[in-house]
Amino acid sequence: MAGEPQADCLFCKIVAGKVPATLVKETETTVAFRDINPQAPTHVLVIPRVHYADAAALAAAEPVITADLLRVAGEIAAEEKIDDHGYRIVFNTGVGAGQTVFHTHAHLLGGRGLQWPPG
Image 1 (cartoon, rainbow, N blue to C red):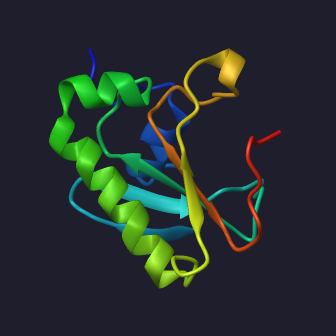
Image 2 (tube, one colour):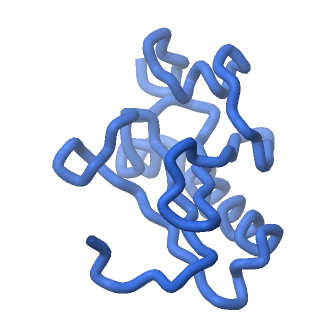
């Protein structure tokens, strides 16, 4: 059921504390941790505590949590001191876009020049 933890979901296991992660920030609705394969000097994943497969599903069902996700990403950008130079928040949706874990997550990227369009 959407919103409920999934036994086979890596990010649900991180939320539950069953899989270790380098935590950056936790709130009532989100968990943020460092990406294990960083694509920039700062690469943090911000995820909702509830399980939805992608950003569109989360936004449709939980708009307040979606807003929390973006707010927390901005707070982390400030804490990581990348907000002055610029940062990117990316949601990959679907296999063709590179999504490998089907639990909504925002990639917060910064700390180097980020060209557009991305590779």
